[in-house]
Image (cartoon, rainbow, N blue to C red; front, side):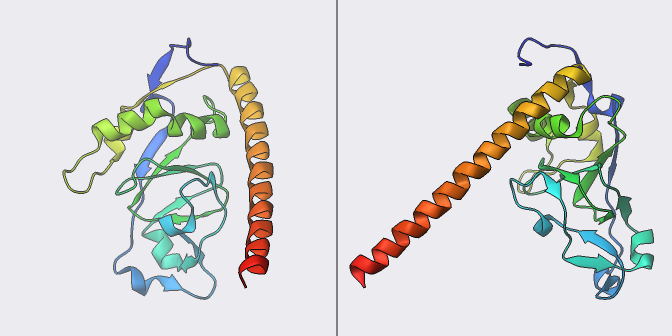
Length: 193
């Protein structure tokens, strides 16, 4: 759909990018009472698209020393498993292991932008520019320089409809596989026990 589309720009020209922040020591700011969501890499799976839960909360004082994010913002892991994008579905705060991408909505549909950031072309740019020899890291400046295609919003909307249909089909297939595995396990128990 986009293989012949060659209009590109840098992420910095269409979005705001900044790094999360961690209050120190973090243990002083974690709360089990009312607080703001403290979003960590453990709150999302490798193939998740949206962040919809956070296991921990941070106090108001901790939130003031962190970076707040809102639904629709992107967070991007910046170390170890760097380059994984997620769309925020909740309000919260993020630590310095995340980069935040916001203010992109005049150029991109969120789901299109997610798949664009996950594309081989963008991931190769992340990988090629990541710093470090043992532990590779992304930083705000490296992400700002990444080049992305900028197709018209109408074409992006077509892609989003297609992607949503594919995701629904994947879910149906996964549910069937799960059912067949349960049937197989039941028969195995019958035959061998």
